[in-house]
Length: 217
Image (cartoon, rainbow, N blue to C red; front, side, top):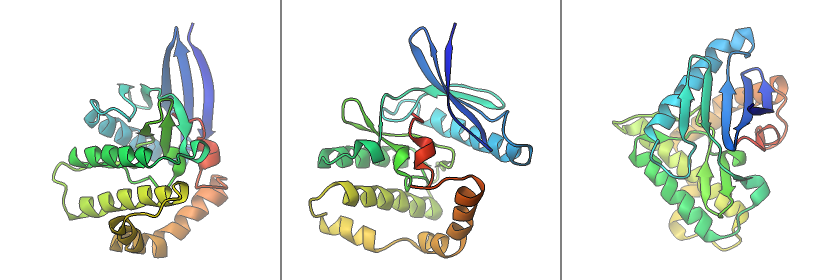
């Protein structure tokens, strides 16, 4: 009989880790989401399923195992969230940049790398990315895509600046000093609303949900 451990329950449903004879999966169920947010929970689940299907051959992201109307199962990645693993090695961030570049070449932007728990330090020390609810697949990779890809990289460099004490190369310092127009617009208009919803309504306190996302692998 499969074992099931509840990792997270909120207005968008439940996330469980299941173990069926050594086969570990992460299962997202939006069927238990609050009625007024259920449509959005279903939409985010479908969005994540579509992106994971595109990334099916990429090492360092969860693999899509099953997707139904309100249920998504993906592979479990054994590792530690970045804010707990605290990677100090430049090689980790170089590998993370290569992984991110691979996603971008496939037409996927993550869109949520500001949150440290969405980056993992796997058991072998390599990086991984999780939580693709807000990710976007765009085969054309137009101007908006390129802006969002730039922000993906900028958020990764912010984490590198936090955990690697060595000085950053000039190009990386320039990227950090120059947020995109979309980022400036987000900071001035949308982020205050986002923080009100996540901190006041959803109860996230630190690291924009890090406390609640510690074991979401």
